[in-house]
Picture: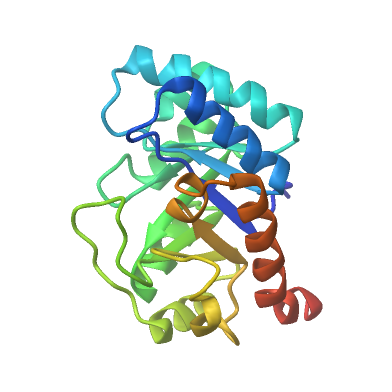
Length: 216
C-alpha cells in the first residue's frame, strides 16, 4: 500500500508571481503542514515545467511530502515525482498505470459515481471531486453537489477529496461526508501568510475527517 496522506492537498498556482515568490509561498505552505502537493502549470513549456518541478521537488522532499504533477506524466517521470494527477481529457488512467507501475501515485478527477468507479477500476489511488464552490483558478467551473460527493465517497474504497473554492470559512457543508481531506489552491496561494493559513486549514481538514479516520 502506498504511503500518502491527502488530508490537506495543496495545489499550486503561479499566476502573477515571479519564481522566487512562488517558491517562497510553496515552502511556507509546506512548513504549515500541507500533506501532499500538486504542481499545476497549464501554460509553461515542457522545459519550463521540468525546471520548476525540480525546484519544487527539492522543497517537498525536505518535508517528506509527495509531489504530484498535474496532467504531465513525462514531467513527473523526468523529475522523479511521486505521482501524477489526471483529468478526464488526459492520458487514460489504465494506460498511465501500465506505464508508471504499481508504486506510482495516480490521482483522478471525478464528478459522478460512475466516473469515480471507472477511475478506481482503472487504477486510481485517490479522487478529487468538485467543484464544491466556484473557483478563480479555472475559467469554467462545473459545480458538484455535496450529495454527489457523499455518494462518491461511499462508492469507492480509495481516498476522496473535496475540491473547488474551499477556504477556512466555508467547509461546514462537508461535515458528515466521508472525505479523506480537502484540496485548496487560492486559500493558500493568495494568502499573505501561507504558513499560518496552511496550519489553520490542516486543523480544519483533520476535524472534518476525524470521524472517517476514527472508523477505520
